[in-house]
Length: 395
Image (cartoon, rainbow, N blue to C red; front, side, top):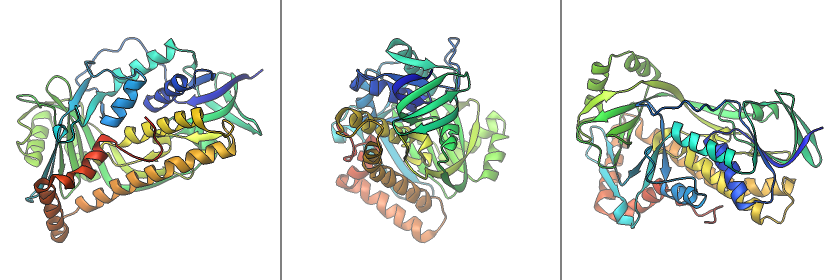
């Protein structure tokens, strides 16, 4: 006999775990299950090569309300200043948290220890975990979705939340397409050590081949995201450590200091992608399963966390039956505008800055230069960095 749940979340990663914990916190009377394909082990040790994500200040504040984020955790580092520049051109802009009376513009969080902390919280509250396990079949009925897991377990749920990543097999089971458009760019991801420390200063630098970002981490490290053509990705990942550091220093300059060490380099192709629909029968799609964006502004997880906020709030306040067509339509209406805005602006930034047009370069320089001269012009960019959005959230 199938086990009954109000909400089943597929995916126990950052988005899925945050979603389940948020719903449990704001709606304690509901029965919730999480299905996660990958076994989480207890033998984790901190590594120089831990991957990182950027959390906007608004995301930090929301996670703190849920007691899911500690500023003093050893795997976090504050972003207090961001400098934006365009390689080979005079325009620059600097955004400081003090200008907006905020303790920070956001934080950089190492994915492995943060994900483990979220998973441990899942085991400490009244959420049923199926791990490792995954969905093999979905049977729809008027009042529920019946899930058959690889283990043979059967679950009935009023609301199914798909949060198992951009390649989501669960989304595919429901026949929800994922429209993608490649950028003809790839990103090299690595951690680099800088002499003299980073002073919580982040950098975004645009080049004719693509943007590069340095996000401050613990222990005088930066998390590097370096976007370039796929051919260049192959060339740079093949370099030895010394040659790679020299190439990085040449491309970025010395504004962040001297790079002294680089960890393991990984790469992935960059795409613009979005699910054909945010909803299906008694189903909502969140996080990377719903939208894939360029890392140019570090907004990926922040956008997914706003999915979580809206869904949790809607479950608590909606007059519509949980999981009903009216409920899922209401969710889609509340999320569509924010998702479209962030994806459109991010895509526009990529196309504006990732080219060598002299006319566009001059316009970019004037824009960045004006932004630095007139602080009021920085406000929209700063709000975007801090994740301050109006629609669909209630803090």
